[in-house]
Image (cartoon, rainbow, N blue to C red; front, side, top):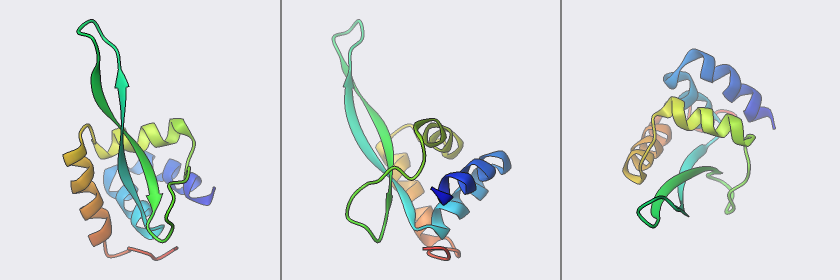
Length: 99
């Protein structure tokens, strides 16, 4: 997974670098909802996967730990924030440079 190594290096550099790497590989985050239980009986919390834009299926572009670090670096906690990040990645000047 060559993108995983690029992402690990980008995380060290910060958010802008992570956006650049995702744009180069034409990879955007997508929201996946799952249900969790808590004392109030359960709530839906968004989870995020990453999808290459030239493929129809989501694939694991990085391991779980790296994906979690990317999500944290991008500051995504909601579906709306995920959509904003998708737009930012697609509009990046390096979109598709390595795809």
